[in-house]
Amino acid sequence: MLINALVFLLNTLLGLLSLAFLLRFYLQATNAPFRNPLSQAVVAVTDFAVIPMRRAVPSVFKLDTSTLLLAFLTQLLLQFLLQWISGFPFSLAGNSIYLGLIGLTALHVANLSMDLFLYAIVAQALLSWVNPYTPIAPALDALTRPILEPIRRTIPTPNGLDLSPLVAILAAQLIQIVVFAPLEIIIMKLF
Image (cartoon, rainbow, N blue to C red; front, side):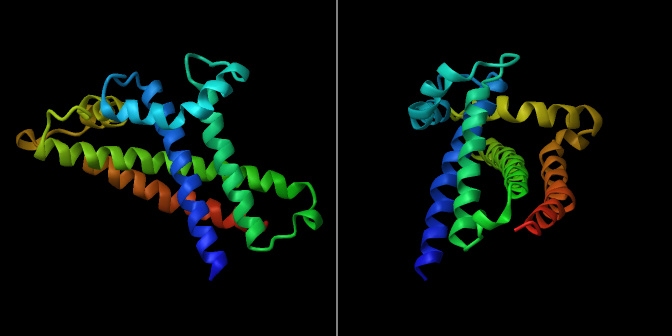
């Protein structure tokens, strides 16, 4: 019972921290407006780690690689702790298990990124019905535009109805089911 509580706590805290790092990375990568409540909150939550990490890890192609690395390292710590709590014998497993742990971490970062975009698309769609002029609307638009624009160009809008969020959500769910889930099963066989 105590182990379940600890697993829940680790998943929640480190998962949310990873999500915050990824959100900061994607908001910067998509040039989302900085002066909105969403961007300001993400910066406030992640500055404690991002500022020192930027001194050590430079940006690559104008991408904030230090923030992406922090998301990866947070997920790596989470995956290691979850395996350690479950009793996995790291000392007996050999060095190849660490490659599996890195692969599992990369998969979880990709899955978390997919979830992040799904949440942003759903939030943007809901806000467009309720309050399209909310202060976080420009950030959500910048975040979802790289995904929704190509879909909007290829799928016609019947009577002005934008189906791109629905198509994006279905495609993301299919990728998670068809690609990510089988890969996770394959990697978990190492543990």
